[in-house]
Image 1 (cartoon, rainbow, N blue to C red):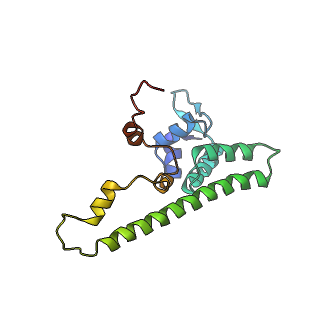
Image 2: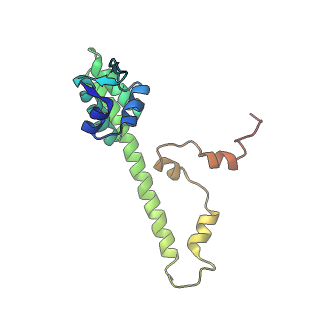
Image 3: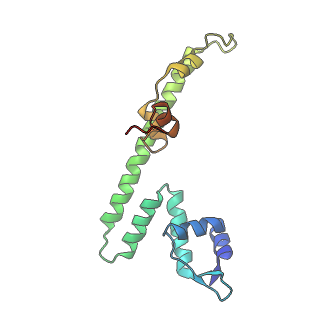
Length: 163
């Protein structure tokens, strides 16, 4: 049996992270000692290591929750786990493609501004950044295609009473 601090140290996370996982339902609520401290058993250690390894592998909390549920369900098959991993890999591949597109765009900007010591006035990089429209690739870099708060505000959707 371990306290929240002991378990957190053993896995290399903060006690707040452990409490967060508990609050979000990834980690079962701990028993309480007579003095009110959270007490975790060896099963919590295994589960927390699983959660941490899954996070390091890029899985979202929802995907981790799904993997944990599959692991606990006797009727689950390897193909169920495989489908979760295939979906994550597809997202990673999309993000890589978006990063490659961004790299090409930055190379193009750098090629347009070959004169590094020229005066700032008329800089093609600054001009391109000022006039360029946001692209889907930019949104994909962050794993989401929904507009940012700034984008919604600029479009007049934040704080607007119109539906």
